[in-house]
Length: 249
DNA sequence: CCATTAAATTCAA
DNA sequence: TTGAATTTAATGG
Image (cartoon, rainbow, N blue to C red; front, side):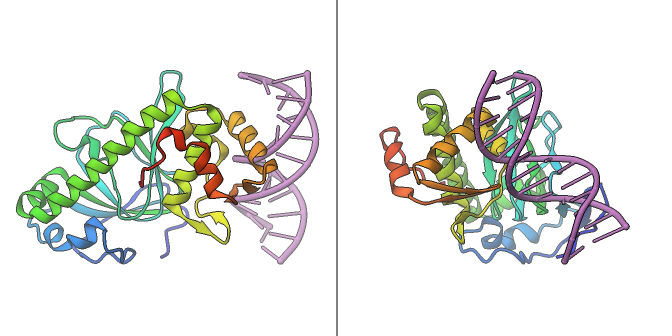
């Protein structure tokens, strides 16, 4: 896929094409429900958006019009705290939804979202989604599962931030990224800065760097620049097992 | 938290 | 493809 190299604007083109080129995954919402989603007669209600690395496509406080499916790339979803520090709420990968908290009653986005890599998004308006949900129970059910899962994870995150030590939170974050984005040649398959680990774990960049150094000394992880390799997943899991490590998303 | 140095990444020639 | 410019990591105060 070729992206226009110099444009700073979001590239938007409407598309009534139902094909989702990237995802062949069995449990992809958009893929499984393409029929329900794409035979709408509503004009201008869905579009493919190309988003360059580092580009913000949801602004906190902006009015909600719809939501986004990720077709390719990865995205971080965050909320800005009182002192301007950003708290990363979650990372999202292809086949996932971004902006869904605004769906329904809320008028404004309470979160922001930035592309971590060049990312293709598929946008649907609220009306479009509503139509598809009402028409198609299977789609509605899949959406509900997604929401339930997100809620579960977010409840657990509250707990982890309030009850775990910095070291445990960093380990928790590492394991979350690892199981979500997987392993490529021994390194976590997602390049994140130490700051981004910190923003997710609810700590500072320095703390993350120090925990990483320790873990490296203990031969539990490997680091090479931005790339992190987990050597011993089990030992890390054990260390936070008292805090209910059993989530799968 | 800030300052310094080392290291890695990006960019453009 | 290289190296200069910029960004990021790591450490110590």
